[in-house]
Amino acid sequence: MTTTYDYKVRDQEGKLIKGRLDADSVPLVVTRLREMGYLPIEIKQGSSLDLHGDISIPGLTDRVKLKDVSTMSRQLSTMISAGLPLVRSLSVLSGQVASKPLRETVLEVRSDVERGLTLSSALEKHPKVFSPIYIAMVRAGEASGQLDIVLEKVAGRIEKQVELRSKVRSAFTYPVVVVCVVVVIVTAMMIFVVPTFKHLYSSLHGTLPFPTQIVIKISSVLASFWLVVVLAVLVLSVVAVRRWKRTDKGEELWDGLKLKVPVFGKLSLNIAISRFASTLSVLLQSGIGIIEALEITAANVGNRIVAQAARDAQLGVREGRSLGATLAAYPVIPTMVTQMVETGEESGTVGDMLGRVARFFDNEIDATVGSLTSLLEPALIVFMGVCVGAIVVSLYLPMFDYVKLLTPGGS
Image 1 (cartoon, rainbow, N blue to C red):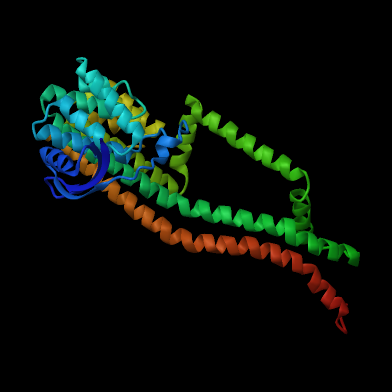
Image 2 (spheres, helix red, strand yellow):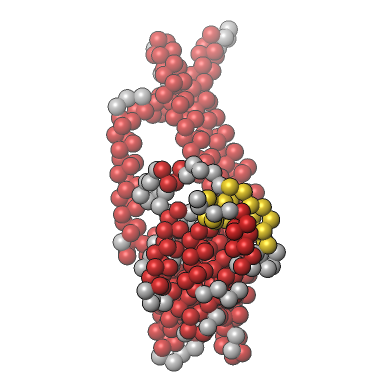
């Protein structure tokens, strides 16, 4: 009876890898792992409960994580490097992939390869799992006979992409959470606290200060059916903006706006330039031609303004102009990038120079995220205090006036 085993191994570079493998016994698992060039560290029977297998939610449980694709690529690279045939490698891989959607994809890829398709053609049938960059690099690896090396590069690029996403989330998550907390606190005060003061002041029949009138008016709106109307307008506005952003014109305007926002604009530009440089570098170093590499890069850079520069650079190179000179015509491309590209063109090391550019901007992103975190924390705390304090002061302003009237000698 076949059993699923969870394992921990180290590859030839000493890196720790976790995975899952179906086999009849532990000795068979050890043998198979050693055939793949791994050093087994821990093997234990996997849990029989598979939540992802019991519940399938389209768009949620069937999504494949980039981290899983990276791990799969490294494992496949190791097996091919060890001399295992491609079909055999895919068969072993299908038994050790923990993600059920990715496991099913690997099984379909193996079936297509068995029928005579190339690996890149089989991967091309699964665009939701394997990006155009991934497929192009695999195709280049097949053509050059260096599929194992290319797969290792693909895995490294995906890991950098995951790391970059994590950095961006860390920069934006904290302010979003704080703003949401402020909204909840202010809404709760408006609905539950302000009405109490409203009833108190209405019994005194006095003229309320203007700030207090504004707070009470907002509270009345939130405590009535108008809250539903306000929420509906907000939801419809968000939906409308999201649809507008999906249009070509909307996406271009939105990406241009992101680059102009103070502080965050610089971060967005650095992220786009890092993606541009790293993607183009990896493609060129994998043996893909400059024209095709620029086309793929433009489709995956993540910003329409930078993508347009890449597309125009592609046309310029096709017409015989240098890549550096074409990119220099775009203010959105930093001068340092064009100078490094021109140096690479003169020395024949464009891919290497772009890799250095990507590392430079990755460091810039790290520094910007660190600065944002240190600056935003106190700023957002002050923002929260101002919002809550403004409401409290507005509610207590009338009391100060009444105290003056009740005090002997008050006017």
